[in-house]
Amino acid sequence: MSTPLPPSRSTGLFRRKSLDDILHNPPADADGHSHGGLERHLTVRDLTALGIAAVIGAGIFSTIGNASHDGGPAVSLLFVFTAIACAFSALCYAQFAATIPVSGSAYTYAYASFGELAAWIIGWALIMEYAVGNIVVAISWSDYFTGLLSGVGINLPIWLTMGMQSAHKYYNEVLALMEAGKPLTDASAAQLEGYNAWSAAPELGGGLRLVLDLPAGLITLAITALVYVGIKESKNASNLLVALKLVVVAVVILVGAFYVQPENWSPFAPNGIGGVLKGVSAVFFAYIGFDAISTTAEECKNPQRDLPRAMIYALIICTILYVIITLVLTGMVNYKELAVGDPLAYVFNKVGVKWLGGVVAVSAVLAMASVLLVFQIGQPRIWMTMSRDGLLPPVFSRVHPKFHTPSFSTIVTGFFVGVPAMLLNMDLVIDLTSIGTLFAFALVCGGILIIDPLGQSDARFKVPYINGQFLVPLVLLVGAVLLLLYNQAGISEFTAALGSGYEEARHYIPMLVFFVFCLALAWLSFRKKLSLLPVLGLLTNLYLMTQLGINNWLLFFGWLIIGLALYFNYGYKHSKLGLRKAAH
Image (cartoon, rainbow, N blue to C red):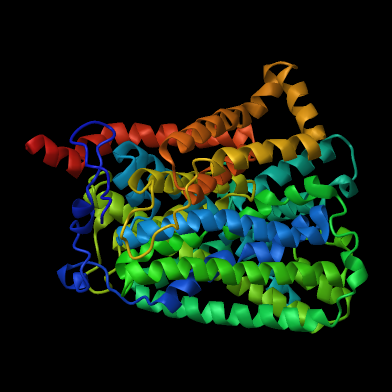
């Protein structure tokens, strides 16, 4: 590289790994598996399929409905804007993947650019993103699967289809209603379901009953076993699931086009920009996951060429599909009808094409399974890489001698996802997953500004350099003017909250920090002529993080505090980089 990575620091929390250290621990050569490493099976087609598998999941089968209800047909543009925002991050990921073609994703990239403490923090955040995300996906898969079985006349015992936490909570709520002398008709359907599940379940003693979401546990077990057996088997399963999923999406688009009524697209943005932006969190959640491709770098046949291509291909394909699906949905029925959990099945049942509603239900089960597969591949490889660096115990980097997969890490991942998925409820906050992802995206964009601020790298792929000296301040100025012109209501709410005491003002603390960061980045861009695209990626991700609510930030900081306690009690003392530098 003509512009090398920053020199590695020898001591302290910000010690950085050199590119040579990263590439030779372990060797990233083509026959690395002969030394007990991972096997290289993935091509650009397989990687693109993994990206599509991660992105075309819950978003297209569920969250797209509520987003369309809030924003109307204009939500199709929100998918485009969100994809552009993700593209800034994807370009930065792609340059890192071409520069540092090893497992670990954002964790490894942070180690090379920001140093060890930042790497640990992002690795810990990714553990939360993948684990919490997969618990939610496993529970959602179970809901779709049991609904599908019910549709063909197979009904599992109710106490085997929901988590113990949910059933116990609803049981107590119904008891409280009964003790207050109110009729059972006052209870919601979910409360009655939980009450019936707890009442029918076998007793375990001590007031506990055997209530568990068995399908969620079984799908996690099956996916974990597949990932354990090998990357080749996993990629074959992923390719098959993605092919089936894309066929169904194509059929939905082709059949749905005949039922589109253009008058449903008017008004295009019935609730204005505010209504469209309500769906930002749901739409962005649909896109998280393309970063998981980069965790498989050591299993790619040509990572420096194929990883950047696959990230961009997956983003483009998924965006086109999301936009078309949104236009078809909002064209078939009025946007006001789309606040349902299964919008694709709903619209086809509404227009009388019930057979396609059934096909959609089947494809939703496949889609959820493919998302689960990609994240169950990604999580162990991050743990494996952290363990190689000494930040986690050595057992996490153990590679199976026959299957050439991170064996122990894969089993632990399955346990961490499967057990909570069987016992907990869906109140796990999706925004908590998003905040971890956005944090990773922001660090990756910031990392490019550190390793290659002027776009002078000679890596096989690099973010196109556009001088941001004047453009960054100009973009921020235009954004501020548009805010003043078109969001007076939001500004009034913001100023009123700041003047009404801490309880209200605290919700806007992230936004205040963001404003300060914008000014600092504008000044740095002007002075250092920073590359425009990584700066825009950094700003976009930080802005989206401000929209996730102060409670999610508090949970996120709580998670980080636990992680920092582990780091200072184990990782800092056992860091191979630190021990090697100390030995010299």
